Length: 270
Image (cartoon, rainbow, N blue to C red; front, side, top):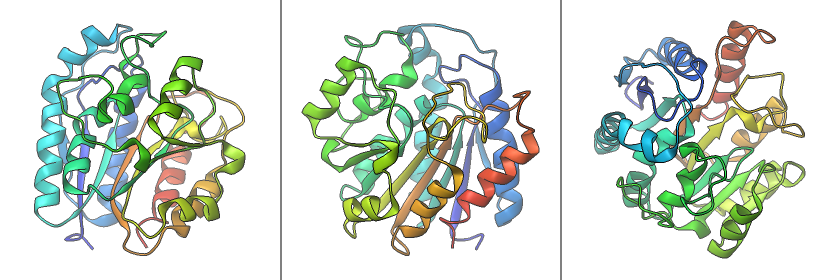
């Protein structure tokens, strides 16, 4: 199994507004490494979180994003399935353009409470993590490439979407599934036998299971994510990104959350 996967762990700040996600990525990376007997490739060095605008956060993340891109390209070039454990969704600025280049026919399952489809013109918060998919689909230039076909993107569990962002998603042809529509059957139907790239932001879940920086009610439950994973055709998954586990939450023990993440991930590693 060790030769099948490559494990890449992001440890460089990429627009982190809290300190917990870098710790969370490290903890999950350690557990995945143990599970699969892999040596992780660690990208970046932690620095303190701060609330800043995307225009400041983006250049600060340059080295980490470039490192993630290069690590992903090496993993794909070696014929392995990359498992990326990242701190924020913004880390995907460095990965999704490579996914688009190497797997142009793949469906991106963006499993997230948010659409992350804002642009510099529409963002209300200035948060870089809320602009990732729009950059990868070419709606604005992050400096890290694009090439993703929005018609091959499915936002699973989306429910906290700004009005202007919603208009952009609809206009670009992105499929957005509300939690009630995010069934294994519907996801499998949309995948339609094509290869899949999976991205998970744990705020897609109902709060209280796996802490994330943003708490959005009305989410999916862990067993529903596991069921979606199990419904994907065997050997269809070309890569996995797990982001936004906020370690250090007082309400949920870290060990319990890590175990739940690993248990859920195993439905993709069958």
